[in-house]
Length: 339
Image (cartoon, rainbow, N blue to C red):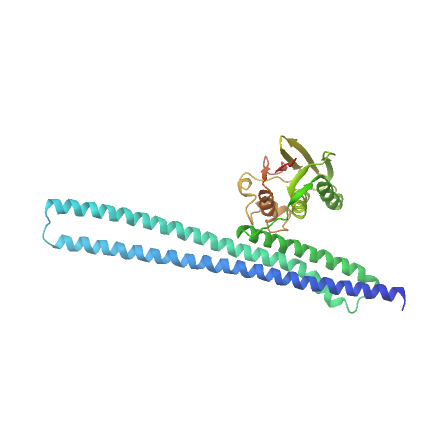
């Protein structure tokens, strides 16, 4: 058998493995969608509960009116009884007003949750469908493509599967954090090699985007108690966010400094910035600034949520700073150092 045939067999086998991995990730994605659908159902149930409360309030109002009419037709009560009745009616009216206001607030909250869940489901479905389209097209052509095209097809499949894997993992991490199931495998380690590795991984994307990148990282070891995989994920998400929202020719700067017993890691970019309206909520799940969606519609708005949850799980903090649209942004992560 020739080397070319061996190479083609390897390429076909690799493509088959990637499709198998895609099937596994699709199952995980369906589980996430099922969980979101359950939340949507719960939101609808809460909306139904508020409507029942409104019906009860209306019935109570009718009952109060009936009592007042009955009292007006009966013999006039004594003064002491009248005062007591008046006091009881005032208290009942106050409770009625409170119940009505509570019902309105519950209904508004349920309606907002319902709209948000619908938007989330639509967004997740859209993001999962995007990489499936090219994969589906490639899978249909695998049997008849020329041997020379197989490596390129394999590369395309791998890229789309990695995109779906990151998306599903971010969704699962947000779900784990919200249910208290996020777990870290922590040990005392030097974070400097992790930072250098994250820079190395992101460098090709910055070159493709024609971004100017600078970094200031101390050469001495910086020991932290952390999970190496999760720390890499934190840095990758922050740098990836800067790359995604900085136009070609922009600048991305990473600096690491020490302040007492705390490590400060800052990523500054000259990108599109964050509006004043979105800045307080930028770490909330599924939050995307309006002009960010217009600049780059990719993503679900959960990458920064994952960053916050992972940083806080390491005992640190993360904040976002920006002067507004078009004025760049800065993300500052603090982590406790270990001697």
